[in-house]
Length: 148
Figure 1 (cartoon, rainbow, N blue to C red):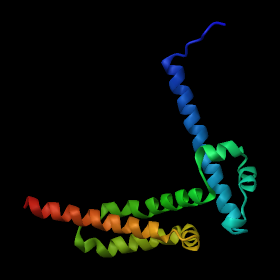
Figure 2: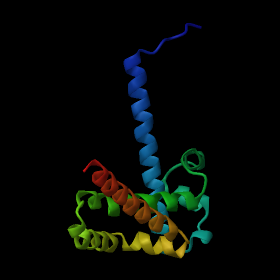
Figure 3: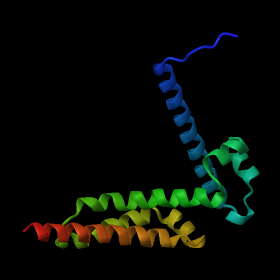
Figure 4: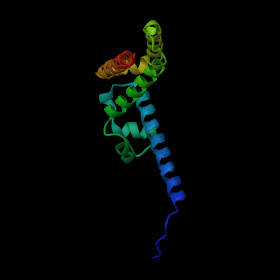
């Protein structure tokens, strides 16, 4: 049998295609889990039911996630990132009002995911993310004062 070598360009295209397929699989599983959670609790949802709804194989599920809880945690972490991303534009103490306003507006948009996180005991992730944001902001302020 003749061994075929793959060109670096073809190999790169194959890797990119696999990454895209994995991203689509993860997105399908995440959306399907959110849809199922509208009708039943996480403990009542089976992996079989989830993969069937997502249109992916069971092995694709386990290739991307170890549990339903991990999917929910991933969804919530992404939601937190969307909530905190706009806050980096504010730097002055006078902007504190705008920071809170932005955070509350973002929380309103993410209300469903936040309520799921609270229902399943993941609110500590939000608390930690906000704490980290405030701590990073405080460290930046301290460095600024050290330079003066």
